[in-house]
Image 1 (spheres, one colour):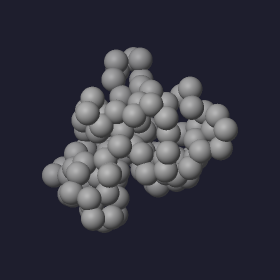
Image 2 (cartoon, rainbow, N blue to C red):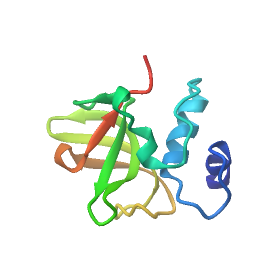
Image 3 (cartoon, helix red, strand yellow):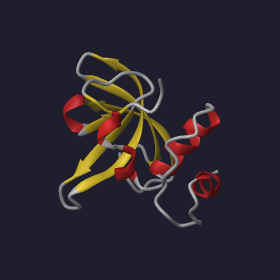
Image 4 (cartoon, one colour):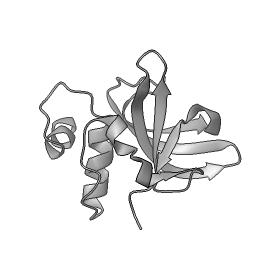
Length: 118
């Protein structure tokens, strides 16, 4: 499936794929955008929102890279916690994982949210 996610965004095997997976999910749901494998591109200013809600794209900022370097989709919120769906991660939370997982993140760990649906 990873190669399918990457191909959807125009990339080949071996590339990081969290943003490609997010884009593929939106495509499967009938939304033509976003369609990118570059996680920072999923957060244009015109799409920015402040609070998490189901269906939003979320981004994790990595200081060592000075950019958003991992993203996923908000499934739901519960107090200060955000339940997420993420590609290219693992149970330990790596941004270079081997699968799609549900994760639980504190709101403070998320740098940005973007709304790609109406």
